[in-house]
Image (cartoon, rainbow, N blue to C red; front, side, top):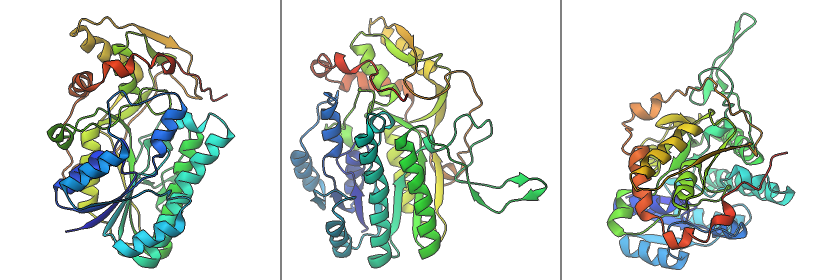
Length: 384
């Protein structure tokens, strides 16, 4: 059975991914330094679902299958990371050990620096150690559709594009990027680093351009009755999850501007599904395999209205407030279309809808916890 390293094994996606892989019989090495928990705590927030300590999670995962855990910082503890890779010789590495929040990266110079160091240097360390010790290892990471310019007014292709410019057809090019935050800048820099190292060293790399993930369901979480985290603060609370918690708190949903700007979405369970497909489909060396990972794209106002409609079934009257966007972004209507052919060609199918996930999350959210989270509802981090 395959040996797999999951970096970020305590995270929103990382923990349920470990559950999935262990249930399939994989040998899993988890890496995490608790950074997500520390950052959320710094914002005076916490998960709206009750989650176990890292120590209890490690015990639970070991009871399920062959699981080992290392508490290290993949960006700073490079010698320890090298030793882990050298010792365990993974067939695949899934690097989810990233600072994942645009707003967090915009708080201050310090927070920007943390985001850049964590995301870029962590990527660099993994690529070098793969080259040195496991050159046939499949490196998988989640980029973000936020690397792309959402307002480019053309279809967003899967990683690469050809351009006809002044009568000449280009060779294959990386699809243009334009960051919307310093976090997104760190992800773009990582994309270009992965591309270079893959070409230079013949590595096998998959970079999944993932859209906004929502919900807290996977079959393994439901079977074990474990929870993954669900954040509601403006940094780590992805928009649909955040709207659900706001609605249960009976505070107005915070729609930025007109709310007509669109983004891609997929459920947590389908994010895990895509990572499974990536593990089963390593690319040939020398060219990065890039997938756009989303099931649908919706406007922010659509998401808010859907939450409002569903909460009526629970006799909760939800209001929607349009507030000035704290970000540098357009909030009016715009052309937004992604190419999503590759994952579908490999068997990916949407299994969870927004409506299902909203209803499931309502049952999982701890009402006692969210009663103390009013102070994180309104945006306090402004791009300008």
